[in-house]
Image (tube, rainbow over all chains, first blue to last red; front, side, top):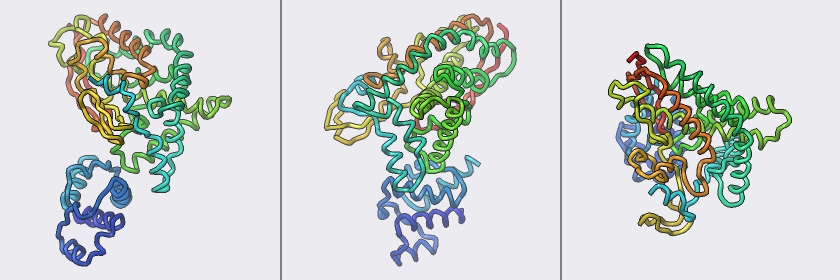
Length: 87
Length: 308
């Protein structure tokens, strides 16, 4: 879970720069959550995040891992479940 | 109802090739093999490109038709003979997949070397991540290299058209035969194969839907669509359709109607004929469909063959 969370944060940061906001960064670095509503995730950003996660976690992901998730915490959970399912 | 959407001139196919080209440019990825093959697939292009590719694919299929038709009965006999021995059998692995692969090889006039791990039909899935897309490109490129070596006198476009047969046919046909037979066997109620009722047209589509995009504001079947809006024409209720033409929606409709419709029906008719001669029972022991955005395709279909 911790490895996945770090990978997701890094991938989102690389694609959106969301941690450049000090307040958001402090919240996330102390284990807090963030809603995707504020990140503006379009399909290209999602593909970029998925690409980063595939490399970092060494797993083949589908972009529908983003379906029905609305926050960092939910995405981490969904990816962990997906990895458990495919491995 | 599916046919009304498929025949609408205001709805075009989704430009899959163009989308791969965009992804390739944005992420600096090599999707050249995919883009080249999709350019030859009538299902993926419109306008004059569509007319040209459809004519070329129709000619390819027509040139193979007689040979394929001659081969179908023996091919079906060979794979279905595996149902003659009582015991448990993996119907997808030992009958349906190899039968379809052999069939597609015959149509393409080339060994496409497809197997259960072939991902080339998944090229249409919008949900693919980048790894899957790279894998598909590698598989198509590798197939292209193999076919180039086997047909040194044929052009790249001729080779790509052979691959189109595999891309469009593989998962669609494996899924359609697998899902249709599953529903027949599941409702067999301990009747022998010879006594079962087989639909005259496979009634569970291996293709869950086809994508369409509205080229202008339009209304189809009282459904208002805005220019640029994408829409999935779903095929999940074919078994409820009553008229012949509605059931034929399995093969699409309008200008994108499947060119393999006639020969695929020959395969289905041959399969039914063969199964109707078998006085054995097939009881479904396990059935599981692959997690797949586009295709309804069994990844596990185990039946118990027993004497009546």
